Length: 421
Image 1 (tube, rainbow, N blue to C red):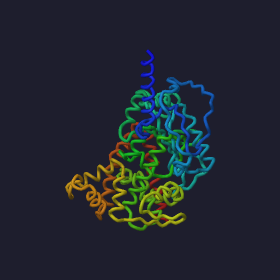
Image 2 (tube, one colour):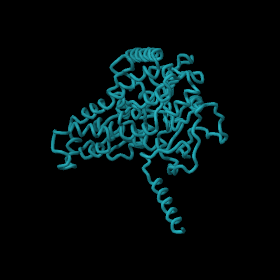
Image 3 (tube, rainbow, N blue to C red):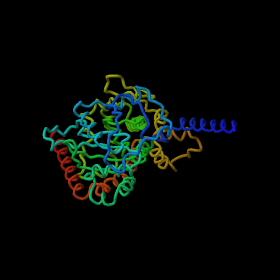
Image 4 (cartoon, rainbow, N blue to C red):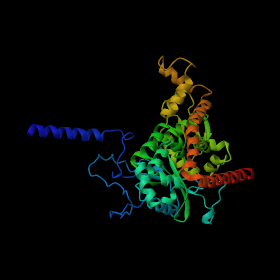
């Protein structure tokens, strides 16, 4: 009996060790996991449980259900924590905190958070730009069920009739988001997209759709943090930096670098060929957010071989030899590399013949920057088109029409601003 008990204890101990050593990027944590963010992003939640009038209520935490992720060093990912005015920070946190459905990770982005050229700040609340949010949750069906009870008006009539299962199934369609738009909260209009942490991290690591990863290449304000997302976001930012370097010459300015990074997610976006998005959006964004872009990428660039970007300097130089470019190329995200491999087939000796020569041949091709841009366009086009069509379902016909009119108005204002500059 004693030997049996010891054997069971050994198996339990081994199981706990196996859980602890799982990869951070493939094993998600439950919502009760206690994580220490690198920098304080919001006020800690009160220990007193909030009384919920909703059904189904948020799932309670189960003690000792799974090992906690290792605590991140306090300075890890500090480049991701971008400051905003106190009034903006308080408003963003107040909006996110008003949702009773559990949110694992949340951020705000766009012209309502960070200033963009061509969009003057409006004192009238009705003329202020809509605040854009992304919420990453653990179980989307459960989340929408709770949110429909608390905020039924956020969803169109057909979504409320068909229920949370319909919403979550629609959300799962590439690129994996459900948007509620033109939602009045706390005196402003907001738009929020809901995805899962698994979907978000997969795109950040592999660029499967570049829809979420592309939005997170640009300045954003983290409102609720998560260690797993912060880790994968750091990989995403580094991937964006490597990709931009591969498309740039030996010498360039930091603004050219930031424009190349910001333009990744707009390649292939169908809205860019229609009067539904400002064609000068990248330039408008970078011109007013240059400091935020630098905060995101300058420290990361210091760790890349062959990149020379001094503190305080706006000029960047890089080693453009085939060996240096091959080092960046081999570390591009999986989906983009797959497209590059397909493009390289039949244009020289196969990879199996001489792997080193294979990478040098691709990286040394003078047409490679054009090829890379073309393959990024292919990745972006399909999910961006699907999400645009999903907007009709998630917002309803009336809100979709209103949103389209607002986008055309932005496009017209941006065009007028560009022509007058």
